[in-house]
Length: 367
Image (cartoon, rainbow, N blue to C red; front, side, top):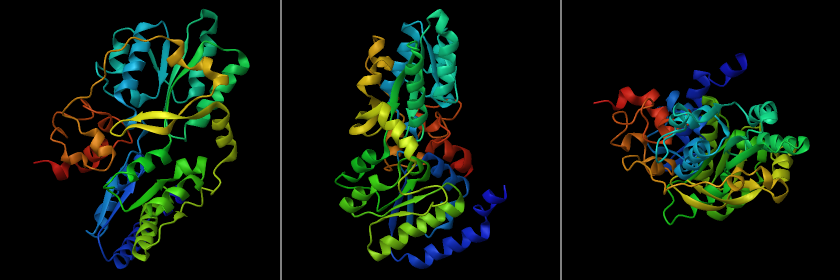
């Protein structure tokens, strides 16, 4: 706890906020691309420490949130139409699909299980193997969770455990940033990069993005001191007219990332186009199984019949995820949309911006 307390120190945080205020001379818009960072920024009131000229924007940094409705619909169809056990993370059970949630499917008899990792799903598949019942893991997440899924697939292959499969929905951060910045009117001037993603993948993928779009990208962590130090790095670069990738989370992130984790991803996955909520299909922004492991792909193993997907028209989650709206801009926020009765993924996930604002800012926005 002493180590954590050092990065939540109010005096250090105030000094960093004062340095930012002394450095900034004009308005700047800075986006964080991590739901954990979003929650910390709102929880600790970091945006309220900053000068009015700094606007913080919340990007597509929540993997549960960016998973499109069509993927949820496919998972529900899989659970309902086939004699399978569907495993996934707890947040995914409550994300609304076109016709209910995975929790609804479970209530109506589908075998849906909450697990903490793909290896938990693999252990269940091993246990169920004598019955022949397939176990499918709904694999969502950024590059942080992909190595664990890759190891589970490799282990299933080594054991000949063909009753295990994954419904791949992994996404990659750099192509999404490229898509955001390629917009004719990008909403941000600088970026905070997610420390946990860079801990796995390193920083090299961000170099061409910073150079092409002339935007500073600073890698940082999740505590108040981390975030304020990262914001100071972005503002310092912006004021100086620089646009570099800077690692301010060196206690965790190395520029080369974690070699073993990257190699596990490369052995099992390859970049594929993936649809993101609010952003559409982005080339090479997903991870799909390579041909050698294609037999573990639930999307091809199990034929599915699904109707066209649709979102609740009152939900603006897509605009929130690309930084073009704040949760409080939504007419449904805190009224018809709450964590108990969410209209969209950003109110469900523990990394969702709407959930953060509901938990930490609702009193400020209530009439």
